[in-house]
Amino acid sequence: EEGHGNYDPHPESWRWGLTNVRHGSFVDGTELFDNRLFSLSINEARGMDPQQRLILEASYEGLWNAGLRKKDFHGSATSVYVGHTSAEWGWAERSEESRASPGAGSVTCIYSNRVSYCLGVKGPSVSIDQ
Image 1 (tube, helix red, strand yellow):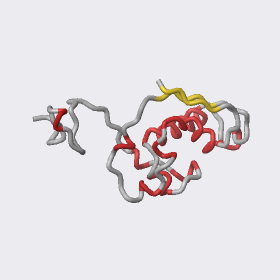
Image 2: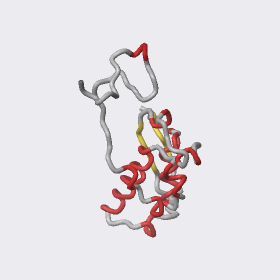
Image 3: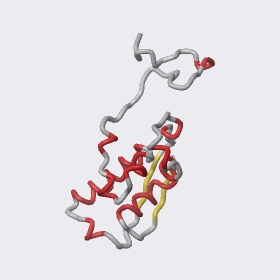
């Protein structure tokens, strides 16, 4: 049987750690996030939804690929717009360290604000829940 014991075909018997779907998408390496690049503490980074980490990395990578460095856009009136969907990470069982900063780490409506803050830009910051 697929899923190695993580699949339960009976949603009425739902329990933590099991799912009633047969397929999923998984991202490797989210724990490799460089918190220092974004001036975040290790505990804050551990408490962040992996989607927030990926958005920060993708934002910085896009600016880097455009030939910009932090000093080029820090303090600028750059706008940040992020389209996102719901996240289930807040429901996941997390370590004690990751629960040290539970607030903004799992709130989807602040994705754009997190990018603005961590990159030091001062323009409009809008998160759009799809």
